Amino acid sequence: MIDVRRLEILREVDRCGTVAAAALAVHLTPSAVSQQVAALAREVGTPMLEPDGRRVRLTEAARILLGHAHEIFTRLEHAESDLAAFRAGDSGTVRLGAFPSAVRGVAVPVLRRLADRSGLRVEIREIDPGDAVDALLGRRVDVAVTLTANEMFVGQDDARIASVPLFDDLMDLVLPVGHRLAGQETVDLADLAGEDWIVNLPGTPCFAVTYAACESRGFRPIARHYADEFIGSLALVAAGAGVALLPRLAHDGVAGPGVVVRPTTGPTPVRRIGLQVRAGTAGQPHIAPLLDALREVGADLHRRDLPVAAG
Image (cartoon, rainbow, N blue to C red; front, top):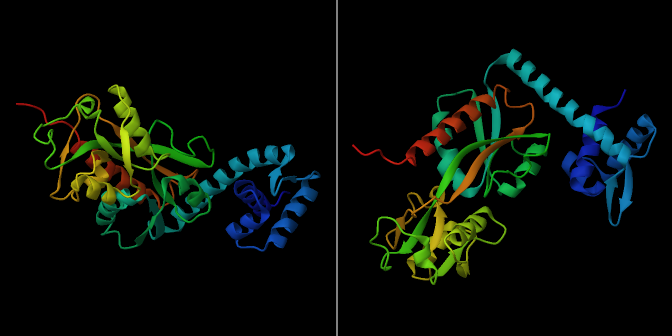
């Protein structure tokens, strides 16, 4: 019989790329990790690892084994869910990971909704969307709020992760209060082709959305300033340093007196917000109410952004 714990260790070696990093993830010494992988190799009768420069990689046999192991882990998660539900109710601690603007715009409203669930404690962990999958697999969080510039979330094709869309976070144009277009109700991005722009860092969803939106209007933005934090972007706009496309989760309620916020004409640029959990855990009694509250908050944010009907 194959030892499931050894399969978990093999999975971490695959994820981390080195025995030392895997040892940190599973709270063992590197020597103990090596011993467990060697014992697994003896169990199945074939090597599990081979050198790859300064790292290690799984052998083909190990990849076949791990492919089956993912299904085993999912079934075990389901079993834990059923047992937890049987043992009782919705008490327990659940850890929610969220990127910075989602902490304020999503996690805080969720905490308010769950305030009357006296047996359920929600702990918030601020994480980068690119780290969500590792945080879930490393069990640092149980649920992650993530985002993407397109239809695919990081880890969506990973059988160990369940990903579902939550809502679209609309992006608005932010202008200095004295800008020539500040008096318009909506602004065509094409009218800003020659302006200086403040953009998020390259490789981020907001950077991709900004460039795609501008290119759809026939120009590439002149990226004069780069800001990782949206508060910095707002400060730069207020100082007259340029214009920016910023998500509503980031600017709503904090834009300040030095800027004006305007929707754009045509298709609204969006970044897509989603939820991720470890496969098989969504039904666990301490996770299910959190997911329900997240969906309710997402629905509220979606309704907030619907156009008001005339009449």
